[in-house]
Amino acid sequence: MKLGSASLKVAALLLLAVIVVASGKSIDKIRRLPPGIERMVARSDGLIRPPKGYVSKSPRTVEGRFTSRVNHFDPQNRDTFEFNYLHNDQYYREGGPLFVVVGGHYPINPYFMENSHFRDVAALQGAWLATFEHRYFGTSNPTPDYSTENLRFLRTEQVLFDLIEWIDFLKREVMGDPNARVILHGVAYGGALASWARQRFPNIIDGAWASSAPVRATTNFPEFAEEVGNIIRTRASTECYNRIFQAFHTAENLIDAGVTELVSDLFNTCDPVDADNPLEVELLFFAMMVSLERAMVEDLDVENINRVCDRLTDDEFETGLEALSNFLTERYADARECFDLSFDNFIRYLTDVDIDAPSNAEFGLRQSTYHDCTEFGYFETTNSPNQPFGSKVTYDLFLAECQAAFGEWLTEEVVYEGVRLTNFHFGATDPRVTNVLYTNGEIDPLRHVSITEYTNLLANARVTPNAFIGQDIISISGMDSEELLETKHMAEQYITTWLGSPISPFRK
Image 1: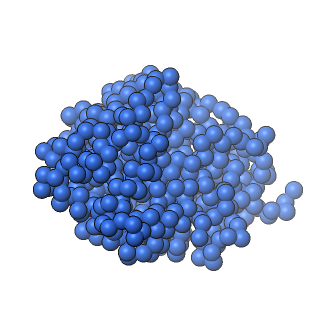
Image 2: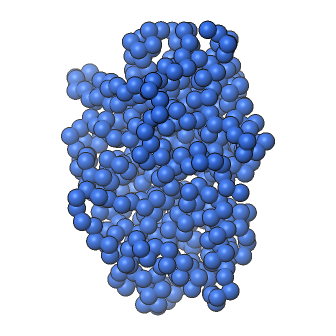
Image 3: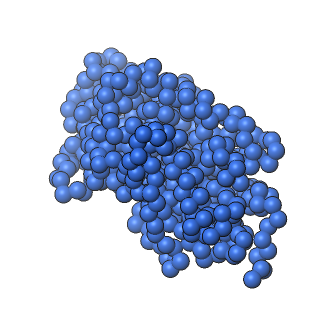
């Protein structure tokens, strides 16, 4: 079953999309990043980003720039910067609320403001719609470059104050109604921000719908690989799971035994795998894992899992290792002539401090990696035995990435402390918040760091059976299952409750 209509393809940037940088600099095809390798720098945004190149179809969508403080917590620092925002009064009726789509680690885009179930509820409620661009992304930059020193203002607390002060401006200066109720909505990291804004500012935010929101920071995130393995088992077959398991463990055994030439030849590495270089070995298995995952979720079509598995379990291959190497080398032959497993190549884009570098301007690689290294983690390790991708991808690879990109000051203790403080400040899976609805899909790896069971006064959580990440944010359609339809109705009902007496859709 394909997950939804064309509108479901909100993530032109796939789970493991390939970076193609075209900044006037020639990139050697041989040394290009392995397909999907940048997935690790968009961990908290999951799959869901606006479709690349989407242009607003509404003449009522208006652009603006808001002036905010660079550092909200230092009264002696009066520096300011401007960030982008969009708003639309197409559905607004006098006295109606403000509905805000909370942006994530990507440039501003009107897509979710104009194409979503949240938009549909806004139309029913007579709401004014708006969205904003997260600091350090797109063209909303508080500093002249992304040096490590300048990234110190990339903190969740700073973003929340940007959001709240902008909302106050919208209510007073744009809507002309300082008493307008405010409902937030976000998916993935944007959903976490929405829930945290309600938690911190309940006097300003009346409610928040957080879809696939990773609210529990963690350094090690082995559940991601576990969930991918479960999806392979349930959506394809145990035979496919076992074939992948066999392939990865055979490759591990060969490298441990020093038979690296065979592995290098099978996976077409640019240079022979150096078994004495732990990071290079980890990088090989990480590249294999994310490249395979990318193929399985392309176009957000879960049927791709069956297509990939049909190839991996084909009788023409005697072993899992042979099947996997053949699949990966053939699939990505046009993308690169060989796999470059050097650590320098791995972090080459992360060390570019230029704001206009495509890796930063379009994909936000350096910025989002810094945010993960200092606050969230979500490092997709394979140290759990309950997944098929071997055991070689460890926390060491990601710690080395953080240090190579931003400096040796990012020690293991500093990273752990950043994660601990995030959970301490926001409560992780026990935020003790009201007027928040957490929704997740059953086949969404982010649900393991989200809230799936939570009930208190006017707050709840729901996991939609057989649903993928962010599937609940799409407008209601005839392709929705009964369970997915129930989730969407649940979101509408909670929003209506948070607003008090709803505005009649027939009100002039």
